[in-house]
Length: 640
Image 1 (cartoon, one colour):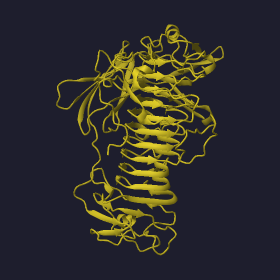
Image 2: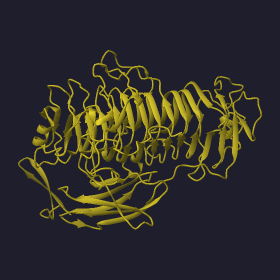
Image 3: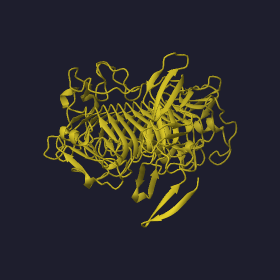
Image 4: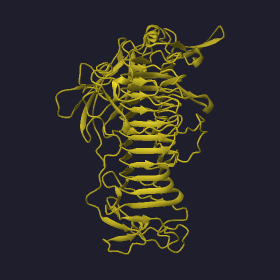
């Protein structure tokens, strides 16, 4: 197809043969199955055409062997949205495609998944894709390997054999060189190292008897297990096995160690507990950190390597070093100045297929994050996709509870509970096309910012479903292709904040079926701006262009959004009161609240059906917010 460059009134236009033909029809491209996780399956379908954005992809699924198909959420249409940060020279335009997930499936189970593309303007190519994909199972040790026993260097009692003094001796075998660089008879794939009770705190400056701990005090693990035969390092169960870093920089360096599992151990007094990957250099896959306790640490688990896959970080307790008695942000607010960075991040990852679930994280700058990686790698197998963050319990953060920043496609953030974050609750600055799913999360007390942050990244492709935000939700800096349904957003009596503040660069962002509790203030409570009628995108909009509305009714009438939205108050809950805006540093205890809805409240049966997200609703229609009346409350935090 030839292109000619023609001058016209100082403007250059590209003209192609066949220009008169409509490009509104959709042409199908490559269909991508992302790495499965334990509960979710993610998919992408590249396209061309569909200039008017009216194509769609319906999704159905069923267990292999079942006759009946179930409906899932349609794939999200993305493409031509600008993601950028001017100060970072970041400008990324999302590719045209559909992407989305089938959610909350059974572990270790095969599913047939069917995708049907339609377009009133026509579909060119194969309009239906059907694939069979199996969810992953919970990682398990190999039953046929050896069992090696580790005891503290000062242990004098009876031992199970084969026994070793310290973890490095069991992992690499007794060495004969300076600080044991010689590896003789190391651990093999499938082996289990049982770490018996005691304190593992060798003197890293003791040249004579360092027990394998080098001068920097770091355990460097480089041996590789496999998914079937991992290398397992596990507390023996005869008492607490404690690894004390003695104030070192990082304790366990696992960047070169695929499928190494760490279970039932305590790590303390180190800047980084698990160092798992460095951007564009090296990182591990298959890392498991389960049922561990990390206390007095600067970072729990850290990984920024784009090639890392299939982490399982579950049922851990992570305790940072930040203030436990008052809420302090990283920028000044209230009576206290910004805090120094004592602890950075509880868990940070990049790559694909990671599962971060049922952890308790407290007293960090941020709790759980995807790496703010920047422009995604060109190789789709190294982009941040198919990452699950669910059922975590998060308490007292300097900045945010969970950040999806840097995520590309199918980031699933569900059923998390966050109490007390100084700056913001959830973040997507930026999301590189999405979808990023935020659903059934509970947030309480976010005095400086609000529920969901867009920041400077103009994120694209975010789905916000069934959340309960006891905080305002103001995203005045702008986003693209965001969609709100069935949320509860309750103002906290803040005199200067609107309960809703949104700037959408795209006309196809949508809001409906949400419940709002406006603040009792003379200032506008609904702030909104989107492109003019008939314009798909306008990236010249600024917060100064926003329209202000005093009431939900005015907002509905002027914008056409929230046609089914309602006004609510705190009496919809069994026991929830607003945080005190006059005491922004106060810390609220999780156990003092009950977020279940009163059976007769306005939020009950006020939502819309979202297939695969609220199929189990109990009444005439789904309820608003994170908790469905009459259904079991999710378990937040560790299960042990």
